[in-house]
Amino acid sequence: MDVIYPTISSSVTGPLGVAHLPRLWLKILLHACGRLPEGYRHGTGGFDETTCSNIGVDVLELVKYVETEKPDYQQFETWVREHATKLDADSIAAQNDYITNRKMPEEMAATRRAELKIADSTFSNAVMLNNLDDWAGAHRSAVGNG
Image (cartoon, rainbow, N blue to C red; front, side, top):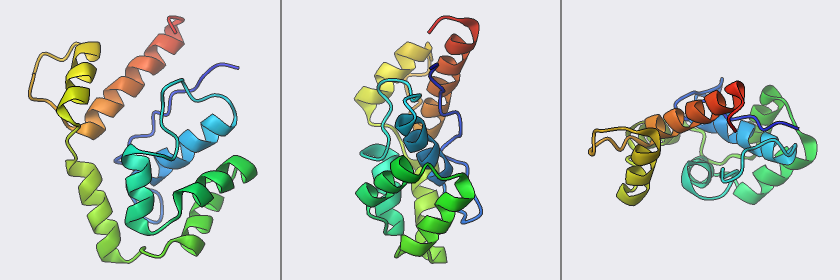
């Protein structure tokens, strides 16, 4: 099976209004189906783990649910609604602000900028660097270069 790049941005929200949640669902689902490109996190570390922490969901339970049940997005959000302990407006706003304003650690940002041929050595917005990386992978996959 071909890999599928998770081109849903971390800035995207679903009906719950939680940034990164749709991307988290997709990455775990793609991994469970053997279609997530190598090297992508899918539940642990980075935005994935922070999102779970920020909304009060056990990351291991969430991963197990998606890998076992392979829910569609609406089913996934229903599960999150039933299990999250911090879905109040302030917690969601804090999560969304974190995602929007997060800078990638400099060493990782420098590597990503080099891979993507970004000349601006100060560019470190984590969401945009991840977007550009996803889009580059999707392009390579579409045109037959990986």
